[in-house]
Length: 302
Image (cartoon, rainbow, N blue to C red; front, side, top):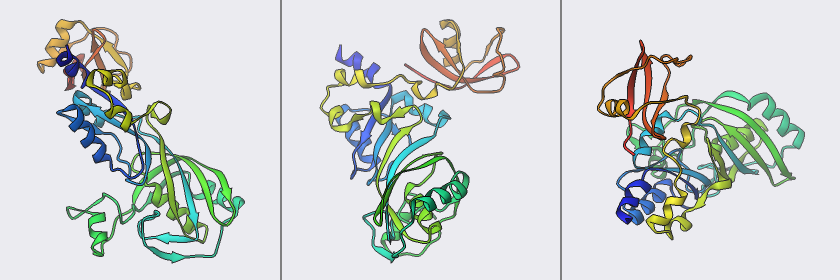
């Protein structure tokens, strides 16, 4: 019975709350070692000093990661004013100081003017960005000079929550994938004619995953494999924005074999778009239509 559960329960998603001080890879390693998962992956890396939502894909769910389109994230964080560090967080070496402290009205004004919408951002030197095959943080630790190119990011909402005068300010930001909160803190400080670094970074939301229902890693590691099953979310949990088509088992078997299937029912306006194929309530394939045929792009075994 446990062996059967192992097969079923190792397919889907875990909404893990990562604690500060641990890498995203460590979370994967601990889960893999405890439950002997053959295939695990995470959706959206969290810095070691950040905490919050870290969605973990188990088994076949790892195949869905590249198809997740609802990739907006929400963070809370605090900027400590007056000091800049080389890592843009509390662990780095102080490289610049300023006596300037921004006023509430100036913070709100510059956010509205410069930090909403599409903008360019340069990731921190201490980051996992690859430079000629090497991680940027590896080069930074060796004091090797290098340049990281700016990249486009998207900020949907940026709110000043609390301001403790002459010390720090707390924020909530909703942003697109690839945004570095440490860089955001650095750049906002610059625009306010001062310097600062980010602390207490918490990812509150990552697509459909949120801290409200996230489970701490320690709690999961205390579970048996059978107990873990109650925390595992469905394989297609993060794909809720895709249209669905239900088909009979004989056709789903054809798709699993890599064959195309003619579909003569009303397809609506999904011609050429990705959609989910389900049979008996289970995800069979991510596919699209071409001239009336279902073309499987990614098949699943569950």
